[in-house]
Image (cartoon, rainbow, N blue to C red; front, top):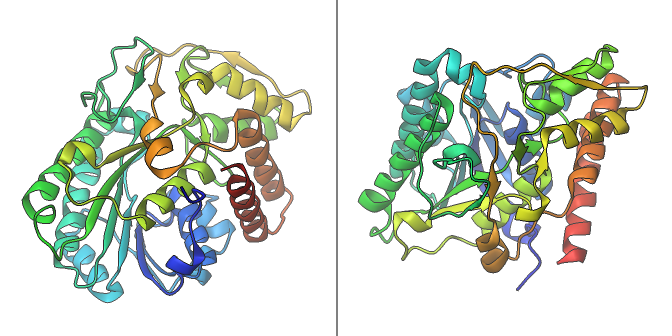
Length: 364
């Protein structure tokens, strides 16, 4: 099997539309696509935080077009698709924060479910579309807290609005696949990505571990952890994005049922770490006597244990997480350090992309 890295020869000149390009993961994805030579258009709300990856890297200057609009606005989505005439679509636009979903469930469901439906409707009308990849989350699984690794065929559910809204989005994707795409020869191939907890430079969202750590350490404060013993499948954003690009490039099979269009991307089941371990790694990478303390908060029903099985991606795509926890955190902290020092963040982002791709190719 070929190395699980995207090929510039395939992406060069391809018209790609990324929804959510002003966000953290969408920004890294759009940057890598531009480096591969794709013609990238974006559709998203304004950057969700200040500062943001989108502004800090000057990503808007690299794009063929950047449309600032809302996926809940169906006519705006349709217009953006008509103008971009994409060959590949990555749908990442979402309300991505668990605690925000708990506080504001209605807009969370509107964005994550109906926003996805609007994108799927636009995909039905797209003339040149070949591939569609929809991002959901590792939290779509009905988690019994047993700590076992969830595979793509496991039951979906949700204990709080964010995870439930993402499971709802997957139900919409499955319905569109079976109703409109699977049996239509000219329809695009469709896949869903369920990525583990993603870290990397440029994420400044509230109530997320690494951004909270960088803010606290930069201010000389201890990081406050709600659930230091909770475990998650942590991975660097470049591992998740690399898997996403490889999946799109290789065109998921068309002869599969809806249950088989989803793909897990996360570390090996034995490489799942507790929140406290990530905080320790971040504190060590930051230095300056950075530390954390525990402050329990049981008001939101978050999972205590979450483990993914990514064996299918390893078996069928040759994809595995390349950067372990220590490297993922150290590369992330280096990015935040550069941002704090006023460094060239686009150059650093491109350097990290190149290093990651070269190393992953050599290890495959």
